[in-house]
Length: 169
Image (cartoon, rainbow, N blue to C red):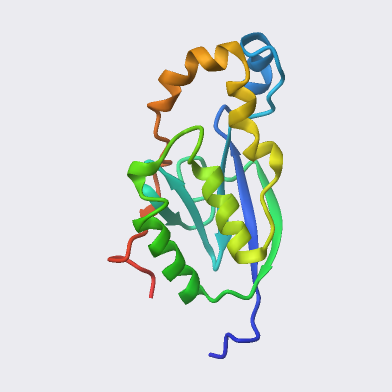
């Protein structure tokens, strides 16, 4: 199959890990309104790709325990083939996005999807998602919670970890 003239749609799946609780509790706890605690993933080539404490994983779209996304954003199209993309992900999984490098505030699912979105489409994910950690940490309560939250590694169950050993060929 000639994939040189093909383009592939790229979507951002957005999940609110708080299931609406952030909207209700953030004004009381943080003194500012947060609309959600965002987990994001990239959907391309019929698979959902995400990063967490287990490293880079994939599953059928909406196939984690989080269920269907709360919001889907069309990021654009990519001319990157699936083979090149899987090689790219394997490389990231062995270096920048290995599971042991996960940090809730600085190096998380959203930094992963932002980087992958730019690789595939040249577009970034929405800033209200990437700005969330600094918004939380800018509050006194966020600073108090930071040591506890830093120990959390989010890895939604239901995905298959991507590594060079189980590369989708």
